[in-house]
Amino acid sequence: MCNRYRMTAKEADLAVTFGIRPPYERDEEYPVGDIFPTGKKTPFYGKVIVQDGGERKLERMEWGVPTQVPSARDPAVKLTKYVTNVRNLNSSFWRSMLMTPARRCLVPVTAFSEYGLAPGEDGKKPLHWFDVPSRPIFAFAGIWRPTERDNAYGFLTTEPNAIVAPIHPKAMPVILHDEDYDRWLTAPWDELTELAAPYPSQLMQVRS
Image (cartoon, rainbow, N blue to C red; front, side, top):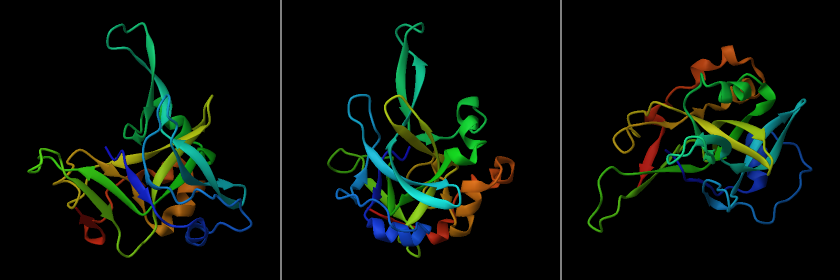
C-alpha cells in the first residue's frame, strides 16, 4: 500500500508551505523525486516536518519503521520488517507514537502512486499517480521514532475514497487538510482520531 510517493518541490517551497523559519541547512540532494521504502541493506530517506518547541523543523529520516516479526520458517527467529504504512491504530507499538505529539510528523508529498488491479497489454500492472490539484504540496499524517540506525517514519492509512478505491481498494494514505497541521503536531491523540479518514475524492485527480 503506497510504497512509492513523490516529492519534487524545493526545500524553500516546503519552508513556505509548512511555516519553517530560515535559516535551515540546505540539502544539495533535495528534492529527490520518487521516494521508496527503506530496507535492511539499503536505507532510503525522505523529509518530514516535526514540531520542536514553538517551531517546525525539516528533518531527514528513513521511510520505514523497523519492527521485529517471527520468521515464517521458524517462529522463534525474529526478523526485522520495515513498516511504511500504519493502519492498526490500536496497536501498542504505534500508539506509543500516536499518543506523543513529539513523535508525530507531517510527510510532505507532491503525488503518491498505486498499481492498478489488472495487468496491461505488456503484462505489467499500470502505475497510477494521485495528487491534489489545488495543493501542489500536501502532507500525510506521519509518525516517527529513533532507531539504532537512524530516525525512521511511517504514515497513517485509511479506507480508500472514490477515486482511489477502483485502483487500490484496500487503503489510501491519510492526507491532512492545511488547517489540521498544527493539531496533528501538538494536540492530544483523543482529539485527532477523526483525522484518520479518507480525503475528499472531488479534490483529487489521478494520472496514469
